[in-house]
Every structure is written in C-alpha cells, then in structure tokens.
Amino acid sequence: MILTKQYRCIHSSSCQCTKGHLSEDVIFLAFHYLNWNPKLIATLSCVCKWFDDLAKRVLWKEFCRTRAPKMMLDLQSSGSHSVDGNWRALGKLLIYCAGSKKSSLFNSIHNSSGHFVDQTRFSRTSGRSFLLPQCRTDVLYVSDPCEHLDQGEEGDIGYFRGVFKSFSTSKVRMMLIKKCAKLHSTKVCPYCKAKLWSMLQAKMIPQSASCRLGSYEDCVEYFVCLNGHMLGNCTLLPLSDSEEASELE
Image 1 (spheres, rainbow, N blue to C red):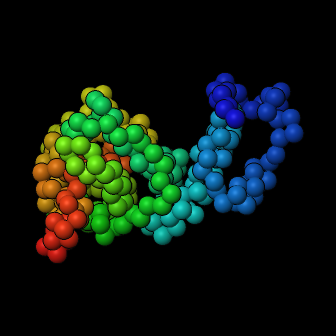
Image 2: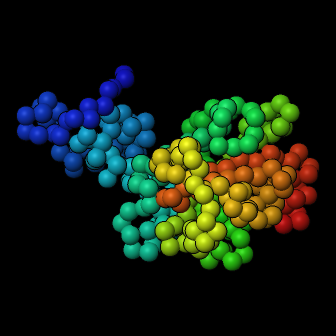
Image 3: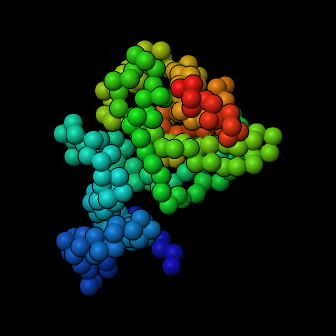
C-alpha cells in the first residue's frame, strides 16, 4: 500500500488522523513487538506530520539502538540525547548502501543502484584507518565495504559508509575548515541531505584506508557531510592481492 504524506496535517482535534488514533505509548509498544521494523516505521511516517515527528523522535532512535547497541551507546556517551543529522538519517545509514549512479559524486563511470542491506558491521577500529595520524583521537565508525562485483573495466567496486561521533567538535572538521575545503556545489548526503566535503580533494585520505579496504591505493574516494556521515567507494584488489595488503597493514 502506497501512502501519500500529508504535510499540512498538524494532528489537531479536528484532524481525520485522530479518529480511532492510538497514543504514543501504545504505538511504542506495538513497534517494540515488531522489533522496530524499518519498513513499517517508514510507512507510518507517511501518514501525516504527527506520525512523521513521532517516528523521527522515538521510533528511529529505538531502531538504531536495537540495530547497533554498542555503537549507539558510544555515540551518545558524551551526554547528548540526540545524534548529528537526526535518528532517521542514522537509521538509513545503518541499512542502506547508496551505490553510485551516472553523474554521481564518485569519479567512477559505472552505474550501481542503491539498495538495502540485511546486515552490516560497523567498526570503530576500522574507522581509525580512514583518519590522518593527527586526527586519530576522533571517533569514526566505518562499515565493511559492500561489494558490487564485476563492474566491467573497473573491476569489483566496494561501497562503504560511516558516521563520526560529535563531528562538530572533531579534528577532521577543524582541519577541513583550516584548509578552506570547498563543499560540493550540487550533491548532498543521501542520508541527511547536508552538503558534502570531498576528502580526496582535501588530500585527507591516508594510505591506511586502502589497506583496510583491500583496495588499490589510488582508487579510494570518500566524502563527509556537515553532520558527520561518511560515504565512499573503492576499487577492490583481487582476493590474493587483498590478502597481501592486509598482511602489510
């Protein structure tokens, strides 16, 4: 069933949405029973602004906590009750590989559609490999690459994504500002719609990133948005070469 979002609905006493409407507590318990199903949360968000607000404020937050409990505990350990970019954006980042389309962010020429993923491992240890030595006190969680195999002349492509903890106070952000790095003129983050910095253009991609990904050194590219979400791609080494790269790391 396709629902059209009613943006003008304010959920007043005269609103049609209130007829037979359940309280927040009952909706919370229902989605807890459904294990915070992201497809159902997205469907509920399309009913009206009130349901959309409830989903962004409560349901997506519980989804993230259930999907990656240790990671969420760390992201909130600074005392914040929220995350940069909102919970819905983070929920999407956890389960969606953005892929690459023609005229997309990445320099690659192939076209690969975005898709949902059942399971993805995000690692704080892996995230250190994507930071320059002077920025490694920052906390960055990065996913294992989502492999898009047999992409013609470019070989096997890996897409990865990540999120910074407290990006607004991070050394990476401070360095980008000091370098006067330019934000992308047209493209935005697929998760929160914020503007993006190119880490390749800012010359802030360390060699350790390709070692961690098992990719060619000159074929790694990633972006970071104003809310600290990261997305990137790389050309993966053949399996035997990738194993050698891991040993060198």
